Amino acid sequence: MKLPIAALGLVPLALVACSSGESPTKSLPSLGSGSELAVAALPIQRWYGTQQVLKGARVFQENCAVCHGTQGEGAPSWRTPGTDGKYPAPPLNGTGHAWHHPLRILFHVVKNGSPGGQGNMPAWAEKLNDEDMIAAIAWFQSKWSEEIYVVWTQRELASRNEGED
Image (cartoon, rainbow, N blue to C red; front, side, top):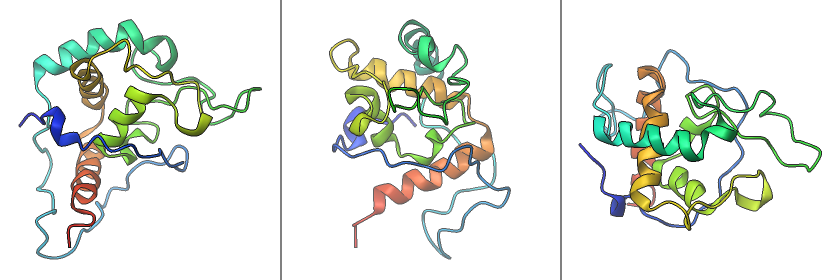
């Protein structure tokens, strides 16, 4: 299932700080009994397709790899602020904290740059179209393990349902 760009809910949201180096535990978090948010056993279908990943690989290598690394591994000292007080580019390959954030926030940061001066991420809105930005996200999410992707999916679905009481 491909996620249309309109479904991202392009609401400006601040990227909140996450604990560094945190990864999902082997036991997946429970979202409640009988919840439609419960995710099926591994593996699950990802929201993007092969063509998006291929396009995203090109977009990422041409625009993002210089800071985030060719495999999305991030800067070696991404957890330590530089002399300017800003954090270097974090890993996007599932070893950092990008998997903590819903798709709409990942998209917002790519489009608008680092929130609140926390990093040196430029805004890509003037250089890349929405489709290219989504493809780059698809590419780096394709690097995530099934375990991380399952936990991210639960977080993604929960974020979509927040406030729908």
